[in-house]
Length: 209
Image (tube, rainbow, N blue to C red; front, side, top):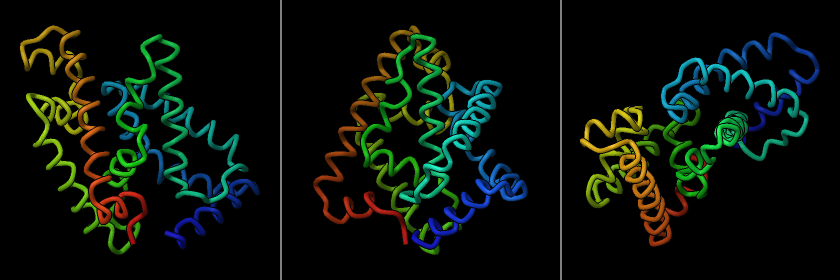
């Protein structure tokens, strides 16, 4: 991870120095991943996801001189993307908690970022991601009622609240309420599981490698 961050700092310095090739390379590498990241958090709205990612790049480049390498550059971009998405929901008075509820705990955020990371970033990433997948799957299976199912449909399959409501023969408000309860239950279960296991806590609290 240290080597990756060192490379990321070098890329940031090149862009700040006006290296257009470095920026184009970064844009081509990050845009598809950030687009998928945003798409799952914006009810599969493709046009809005593109706008959000473009704004993410604008915001990131404006403040790139503040990047100190505390995390991988892609992770830093993801945080800016989260903020852009949250701002979008605030403007629409829909509440930012709808976006960040599953990600506001460090353990949960580590899981989601691990699942989004490419498998070739570090030699052991593939094995580590398999372990994370097993933790997520076991947690989803252990949730009561339809909690695990609705979270899979929403965040893994990318279904909208309306689609989930139809699938469960519920009204949209009832489906949204169910999703909210499922998110809270998942966050609590992951946090409790991580807190109960020193090995798990260590795995989720650091980067693979």
